Structure formats: structure tokens, C-alpha cells
Length: 325
Image (cartoon, rainbow, N blue to C red; front, side):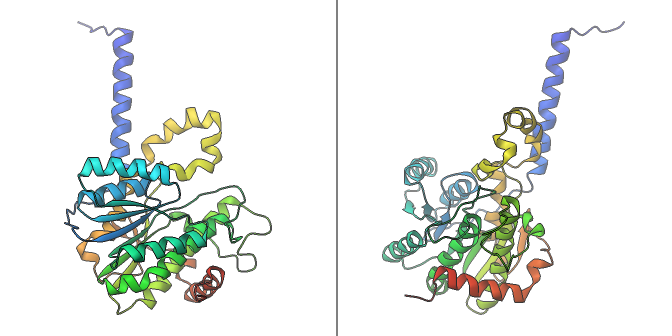
């Protein structure tokens, strides 16, 4: 006897099967979860860009572990809204919003001054905030926006907090970068992209700069008890993609993005390797490395150029006026 299936039942089954496959694919592509359940009571942690995306998810997980978390953000209204939700979810009242605009070195210095007045320890610094493929723009100091925010802003912030990190050792620094560093080149002749600006190449340059900074800083921190590592969180669906044409075009937003959805990480998934680098006990003495999906990974040949890392450090010191009081 032949079983006859009505069209509504057939199509409903097809939709359910497709949806189930999409969710399984997304789960698999999301990578491993960080399983550690550390008690972070009395640990003080700064997370930049903590009011959305990966930063928000990282802050939530740290608050669950009873850490004192400082959310270093540009948008105070949004930060306060997210902070309240995290406090309610975790019952951890030690979560704070503090103004820090990485496109303004004055704002960064003001943030550090306020932090020093309120805290005498810093156990983990998570340099998460970033901008991607934006139209040509500049920070308040005139630095190309992607290089200025993604690298220079965090370079300045980190260096201004190094003495606190050292006095709090063992402590850690986690720098978020991207696999886009593999196509990156440091444009020594036009680092600031004054000519022929290309959003994609400028983004890749900024992400390569972060790894060069990480490796050079690791060398400088040997013997201090402070480690620094870089993390590629994966391709994550966050606000950082807001300038990409694929998300501003109506056709791609409504038709292609749903097809790509299973292969793009949710912010919670993107947060896992950040948590691994920040918290995993096995990494206590590991520094200068690059992690993907909770595993150490190789960087590009350009990222291994120690001479370039030293050159970039000197330029970064000059552009951030690091040694000028």
C-alpha cells in the first residue's frame, strides 16, 4: 500500500528538516565551548566594547563567575542598559560602566585616570572593541579610524595600564584580532592611508598590527607575570559588520544572509575563545600566541616579522604620545 503525503505535510517536514540541519550546522561551526567554571571573586577585569556583541557575552560570563568587571564603552546610555541586564541576570552588582572612546586618546587617558582612582589592581584586560571596513575616517588625533581604534587605541590603553597589571600578577591581556591578518600588510610608506584608501586592506593592516603588537609586548613582558595573547573569535554576527556592503544591500540582507546564517557564529560562540585565553589555567605561562577555537594556531609570515613589530611599536609610541606626560 502506497502512503500518500499531502503537500502541506510534505512542505512542513521539509522546512523542519532544513531548519534542523541549519541549527546543527551552526552549532558545529560555532566551535567548542569554554567549560571552565573559575571563581573570579575579587578579580578586576576591563572589557572594551562591552555593551554589544562578543564584549557583552564575555562580560556576562565573567559576571557569572563573580568578577568585578569594568565595561569600557563609548556609548554610556547603551552601556548602562546592558549593565543593568547583566546585573539582574547574574546577581553580581560589581559591574560598572566607564566612558572610553578608543577613537580619542584623551578619552582613553581619562578612563585610565578614573580607573586608577577606583582600583589598585587589574587582573585581566580584554581589548575587544573594534571597527571593520568603515568608510575613510579618522580618530580625533587624525589617525585612520581602523588602525586608530583597533590597534593604536588599545596600544595606548594597554601601555597606560601595564604597571597596574604587573603589580597584580599573575595577570593577562587578551587582544582580539582576526584571520584577516593573513592578507594584511603594514604599509610603511603610507601607514595612515592618506592615498588610495581601501577599507578591506586597511582593516587587514589593523588586525596584523594587533598581532605584531601582541608578539612584541610578550617579549617585553617576559618575567613580569603578565601574559598577552591574541584571539581570532571567528566570523561572528555582531555590529562590527555594519559597514560591509553585504549587509547594507537589500538583496543580500534579506536573501543571502539567511543562507550564510548557519556558518556565522553567534556572539556567545565568538566569546568562547576569548574566555579560554583569559581564564584557562593551562595558559598561565603562555604568552605571545594566537588562538582559534580554543587552540593555538599559526600566524602569517608577516605577523612573525620581529623587525616590523619593533618598527610599529616605535611608530605607535610616537602617534599615541606614550612617553609624553
